[in-house]
Amino acid sequence: MLGLKLPTDPSWAKIAEKNIEEILIDHAWCEQKAASTAISLIVTFPEFPELVNAMTALVREEMGHFKMVHDKLQARGIVLGWDRKDDYVIQLRKFFPKGGSRIDQMVHRLLIAALIEARSCERFRLLSEELEDPELQEFYKQLMISEANHYTLFLNFARQYGNRKEVDRKWQDLLDFEADVMKDLGRKESIHG
Image (cartoon, rainbow, N blue to C red; front, side, top):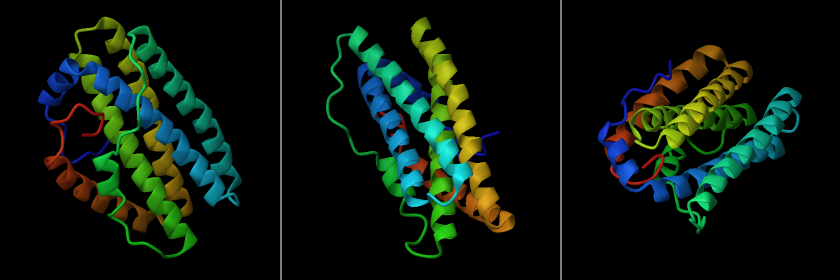
């Protein structure tokens, strides 16, 4: 369903299990960044009411997820700490050229957001299946479902506002690029790393 060309090596789940505090901290920041992305889309493309409405709802949902993860941190006596750079997202943002029409810029941002949500969904599925902590297994199972919905939301908006054939070509090209990026990731205690 997600279309990812390179699945995460299952050994990543073992790295995550051993470093669950770092995973939770990184996850909290990922949720905050997802909310920020939705806000940025509202600010940058306010002339698309359907997109603005969907992103407004998404901001609330993502900040709700941030609170859920932050609550897990606090319950474990872990302080959120500082944000960390996300090498995965940094690499993805290099794929599309700068400039172009407003529609192209929007489509590119929507496709990158869709891919980040798809990879998060895949990682959350692994955590829901591989973690030994039953509470965290259930937690990540529920979040996996949300990430799948976010992935389709972004991808559908890209297809709605862009030329469908062109968007689908760009999506496949981005998936190929992401598979290459993932070859060098999967060995760190982060959601995308």
